[in-house]
Image (cartoon, rainbow, N blue to C red; front, side):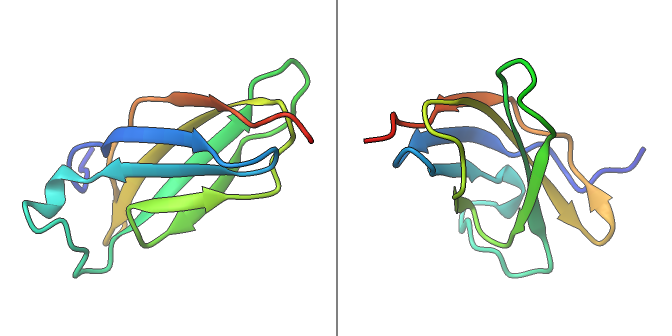
Length: 104
């Protein structure tokens, strides 16, 4: 199977509030400039990990970071990201986890 390149790496998740988490990652296929100058985008998959939490969510972004909103308070989420370019996809990054903050 052809891929667009290696999986994004250094994925980091940081809780910002009871309903939002910031994600950022590195795309080694961009080279040293780390600037996106082509038609690539990133497909982020995430889901709550509690039993009965529901389905996997997905969002598409054209940058190396995103803030995900409308998450549940005090909930553990798993996140992974992959690159998509010209109809090809990279493997998914390693999965990272983060807890949203308690509702205040």
